[in-house]
Length: 139
Image 1 (cartoon, rainbow, N blue to C red):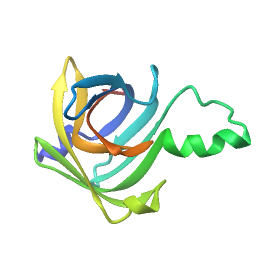
Image 2: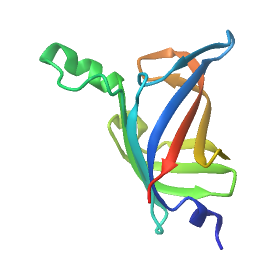
Image 3: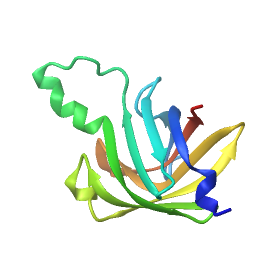
């Protein structure tokens, strides 16, 4: 069996934990109850949508904040059993198109844990964090 078969399916985001690089400050990303889904197809395509759950019905002055508190992208992926690499083919931010999103993959208490090390946070590109996203596979 190919290693990418282990990822196949749809997952629901359960938590986002971030650690600011260099100062060891920890915080939650995308609010206390982030919402999101990630899917991995048999054809090795993936799609990700994550958002801060507190922005439910934004007024016009809050719409720009929505861009900073959500992430959406999709594309083809490869998985070697430890590292997930997605070639971004479409995204909420055109800056991501054509880039590779690299994540380390672990399984912890039945959850898929995707970690990204030293990445900028969407709301402040000067701040670098290690991010740990926990996903539960849907039936």
